[in-house]
Length: 136
Image (cartoon, rainbow, N blue to C red):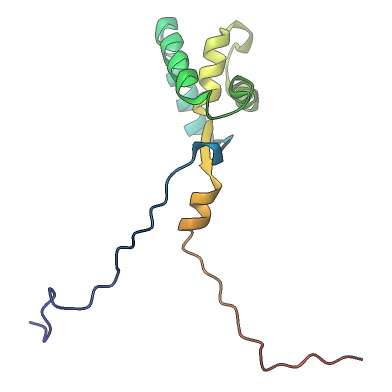
C-alpha cells in the first residue's frame, strides 16, 4: 500500500462558489453532416419510414422546443433539408412536415461559449520579456 492514505491526500481539485449558468441565447445551430454516405442514408430512411402522424407529432414537438431558441428556426430546418435533398428519393412527394423533420435530423445546436470553456487545448505562450525590440 502507499505511504499516504488517499483520504488525507491533498485534493487535485477544489470546488469554487462560481456557478456557470447556461444561456440559450448563446447557442447557435449548425448543419449536422455525418461522415459517411451510409449514415446519411440510414437517417433519411428512418424518417421516411415514419407514418405521417408520427412525423407531424415529432416536428411539432421539435418546433415547440427549439423555435424560441433560434430565430427563423423553420428556415434553418428547410436549409438543412436542402443540403441533404440529393440523398432523398422522391423529394417532390414529401410533405412540408417531413422535409422539416429531415432537416431537423441534420441540424445540431452548438454552444460557442461551452466550446471555449471546455476546450482542453491550452497553447504554450513563451515569455518574451527578456527579448529587446531592435529598431532599424
